Length: 351
Image (cartoon, rainbow, N blue to C red; front, side, top):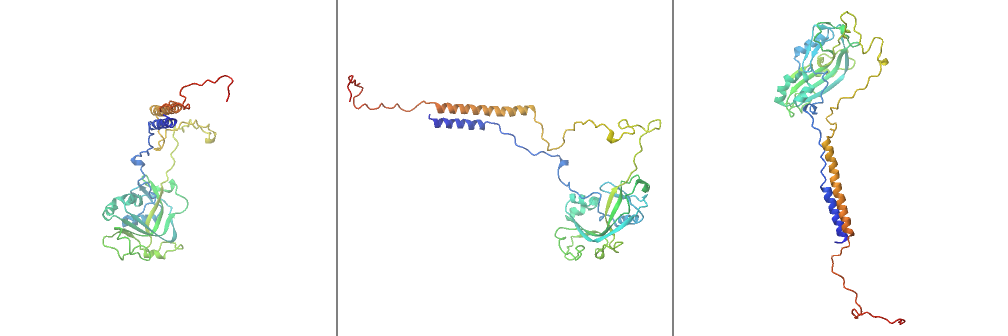
């Protein structure tokens, strides 16, 4: 075996050593729980619900109550209840604007819960039947609270169930319709909403407030919404103010002293708190610490192929430097026909 063959054997041994190495585990994406999925996480502001699906009687009751002062409500994210017995002397002032139009398209139950949270129960069947809901809005201004935000003492009456108060009300006109994508695509008027031409019979007018055409005369100089364009479209809710809880007292009727912060000690004069070790991270993407068994397996994964590599290289070098000749013996050089006769020349003779 010559030197080239020996080197080839060494290379093959190296390749075998690397091929026997354990394959590293593939990096897998972390598995998220159902509550961590990104489905329907982007939602509209839940403190600014639309009122387009409210019955006309409920909208009229809210409007009349707002004319007498601030409106306190009980709101749980899906139901809004006006509390008429919780009153305040504060009033709303109207701020006009130029005419603004908006169209809200809803094509799934998730979108219905995000854009019309007060109407999921009442409009879920219509959405399943027609596959689409469209709300056309014409906005001309808003009613907002005059002066500073109210304080707890500004409210009177039965306010135990109050969770929010109405800080603002958007005014204008709206139309709520149901229908397929084909029926809602054509026939717009100059106002952009309220079109009737080219609509198919499968479309249904579910609710309407105000007159869209009456809103076209709105301007920033208006002190009140134009006649026929003052429907309540959306409310802006703020947390209901509550009085601060009194300091706890002991059995003798004296104020209990906070041992962690005695009287006269301020936050700036306290000794810095001893830092505590943070709790383990709950991040689903945080790396998981390796166990001792897995670490030991990783070590052997490097030792075994390394040993095979050294053996392969040593074998290749030995085979390359070996001068063993496997070919036939070479013939001796010719002697000029004298055979094995040895010529002895006498001393002193030269040619």
